Length: 272
Length: 105
Image (cartoon, rainbow over all chains, first blue to last red; front, side):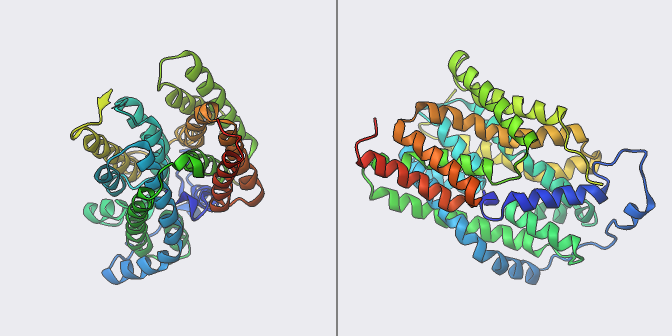
């Protein structure tokens, strides 16, 4: 969700930068002692004061999350979800892009497997994000380790990884900042529901296009290069063909797989 | 298919939440067992943008002229500014204005 706020551009750059010394993408043969020396040795700090500081540090950015939550609330009302349903969804899912995609599949009947597969495809990037934090998290006991990533999102991940890489050995922004993002996401969702109640014909105001425009910005906010462009074209062509000729609701999964296959075959050159 | 009446919608939301929580915790968990291979990273990275395109394509095809131009306006502003909020605002305004001018369906 917060990918909108702190551009994944910087986040992905941080990820690539990190992978270059962490050994996450290093061939097994290349175990240079210098990289090992850069592995963190002390468990990161995670006190209540750290979290409180992280919460307030994230607040300015969280105002953007509020606006996107508002858009989601408006779009959800238009899709026909009950108020309690969209509030529960925002509370337990807390991932804007996946929630917008869910609205696209929503109806009297929801195709459950395509919906869950789409959720996995959209949020799969968080697997990579969690992996980049592992060298620090492994120094914590399991309860705190997994608790710390329970509210993992784009903005708090990118800020925390930056902190850790610059010897601020502290998880306050991940946990406290995550809570700030979660709180404003809920507030935005409710605000959107309230606002939407006063708008009789959302399409007149272009509000039926909120979901599509949001998705498009999430594609274009990240790094733009030829490799990415080819994954998009592969996804677009596959999704179109599936939408046109295959059973309903197969287009998202097949498009995602097509882009994933291109991504697996065409690896980004490892930074030296 | 699963019906969204009764508690169906809430169950769907909870399942979505479980899958999402799995991706939050899964990266740390999987890496504790075995580092993510480059091919797997490449697949996930390629898929994360592709899935959004796959969602948007039918939205564009099913939209009216005003809706399509709204998406076009959003894409152009994103390419020029790189900031989502003004791009989305421009898209919505485009759809609203064109429909007010009678260019909708």
